[in-house]
Image (cartoon, rainbow, N blue to C red; front, top):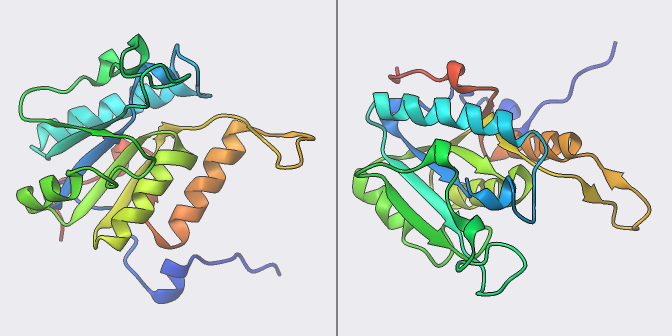
Length: 205
């Protein structure tokens, strides 16, 4: 009989309960038009935006601190040009009053920003993370968050990726394989992975 592999978190006996809303901050990453109508369209982006909108609504209902992280490249860059139209936040996920917007220039949302300080100010020790792209800024930020002492939950269906070329240039890794691989890597040690917003609960035990 084949034995299914275990994650490092399972081997260690760590809790796999998702981060409760009353202990968490929500981090929405790069929910910008560049990934919809710009230079880097993502596979399944419409469904992911809809799930992220549900997540944002739930966070607001439970008064979860929300941080909107957006990427700005160099002026005139091929993507994420801060002077162009595609760095704008998707209309379904626009911030409201008291929700902080953090501008980053690297995949790691903590690098060169005050995000860690802002989260410390609200006293939350756990993060709920969603956004784009799964394999890039979501993955990099989640890994960095562990180094900073946070316990992380990633909402899988509120993320999306894109096709990537094989390193030998002779083929393509489909976007869904890229996304699922990135999530599996995070689930091994860096985060609890939940499928959707409906799996989250308001209060920890």
